[in-house]
Length: 265
Image 1 (tube, rainbow, N blue to C red):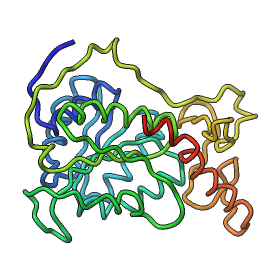
Image 2 (cartoon, rainbow, N blue to C red; image 1 turned 180 degrees about the horizontal axis):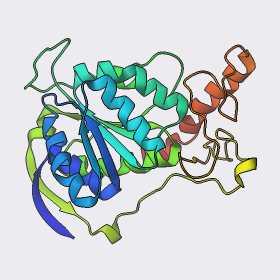
Image 3 (cartoon, rainbow, N blue to C red; image 1 turned 30 degrees about the horizontal axis):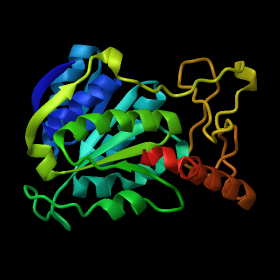
Image 4 (cartoon, rainbow, N blue to C red; image 1 turned 30 degrees about the vertical axis):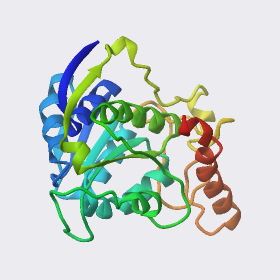
């Protein structure tokens, strides 16, 4: 265990590294840019990859792809960028892709007040993408929680196969405080479930009892088909069957809703 003096943005980046994040795809935006800067510095030190994308749409797409490539992935943004990410956040929910989005909130709407605090993205985090889905969002209120809850965000995203949003704000992101950093051995990490059946028996979206399917990534020998269309348990489009749609959407929602007591702990 060690004690460091970090800003909230740096603490979130360090929490991500200790959680096992090895890919960051992002686009700089005030007041979250320090997260990208820290990840650009730290990821090469641990064998990870940092890439500055052309915009926030591409940033969200990049972390979804990285996650399907088998690594823990994160991006960071602020309100205008979160608006641009919403379509692919919905894609992440539909394809059950674990990833973390850090939103360092600022004044809005539109360009608003880039350097001043606001907490007005709660509704956007909850209902920002179209259709019926549930999201997990964590809201740190201190620099220590920026560190702790970023780790928890990765654990929850891996456990429930879903994007998780960390709702920070400008004040906590730029404020500097003492942060207690446990040793790696003291940090409990959750990894995504892997299939235990042979490749010929694997169905990419066949859930276990907890409603979460095991996840096989590209290159692991399993047939993996990923689509934003309504799909069956094999992952193939069935876009005209209302029963398949109802069953899929209900499971996507229930895998989070039935575990709400655990999420509130």
